[in-house]
Image: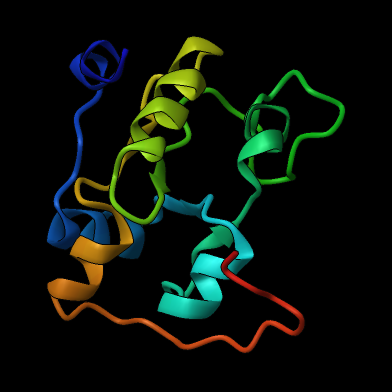
Length: 128
């Protein structure tokens, strides 16, 4: 399933995702709060829970985000290691967002590339 999803995506390495974000692409962090608290976040990334991702980005949805008003929106999904994000980006493509993709290697690769990150203090978050 992962290989099939990735075959549809033009996955971006960290430097390319960073450049795309600077050019207007929407980075979407789908990691749970515990991972964001432990590892940090990407400045400017939208935090959207994985279980509502499709509703928030489908231009036809009454629950969509204001930014999700067209099918050609460039969305780059981020998870911790780049596995869940591939499946999520594939789901976004299935609903019609043909420019949806993910960050190859996830947040860990972004951090290893020494790209900007911020630490967050999320109250009452545990990684259990």
